[in-house]
Image 1 (spheres, rainbow, N blue to C red):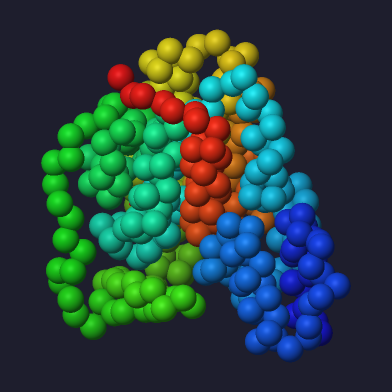
Image 2: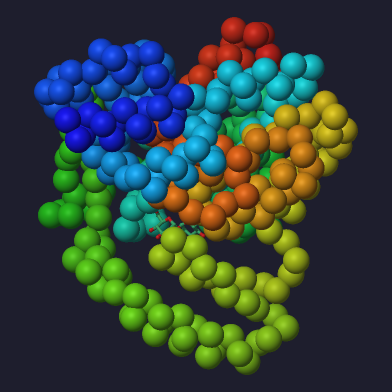
Length: 328
Ligand SMILES: O=P(O)(O)OC[C@H]1O[C@H](O[C@H]2O[C@H](CO)[C@@H](O)[C@H](O)[C@H]2O)[C@H](O)[C@@H](O)[C@@H]1O
């Protein structure tokens, strides 16, 4: 019953109430009820509702940053007469966070959803990775790519590489099956190092070492921090927020009155773009977060599987409303 109570609170926070009286206390049946319900609403069956977000703090945080899925209609209602433009972060947004950055694959489902969205709305992927790396993960030609935190931006590019994700099979490379029986290959070459990576003291030591090197280059470089990642960046005033503005300008959408930018991202570096949207006052910054955190975003999505649900709905809405965008 405790589990039912918490699940009910989560769903209430997500704006799902009508089915609550029908909840049954048997947890297996409840799982199925949640699964069926989420499927009905276009959610993804891998929803972590049954496990990891059973967290009171998260529930109250959700009230401040409501689910972009339950707010979907409200978001769409504000788009009347406006051009929706979609900005997506890559790691942690379109792909799950994994140990090896070279294995942060985007699922075929996500790719199909992004492809569908890009048919109807200008779509850009803004990443801390190099543009080429992101392109090689996403492999869609009709989207804009902005790599290196927006320092390297390019429009539609020809597909230039195939990606083989079945190489290097060893004991770290194993098959997992989701609730629907779909098979996934998981590859975690740094799995054995996880306990060490988790030790804050060691991360801090590394951080100190990097800083001690950078002290010699005060005008040229600075360090930024992401999810278990430190990056040395050239000291120029350019971030994902600038990239967003640059892309809007380049797409010819300077008239903010007719624009509805949507930006979805999970990292600290995405906050620069959220801030730009807040300041513009015309868009929807959406943070991908499975835990409460300080953010400039208005709405939230729990994880990439919810990003997928949101994008599927957006693409479907674009299709139903004949919103065709032709990239030039
Ligand atoms: O702007 P993003 O597209 O979110 O890229 C940010 C960083 O992403 C990568 O690191 C993160 O994802 C890795 C793979 O899931 C993970 O191993 C790492 O802990 C994360 O920080 C990428 O490696 C970085 O270069 C990007 O800056």
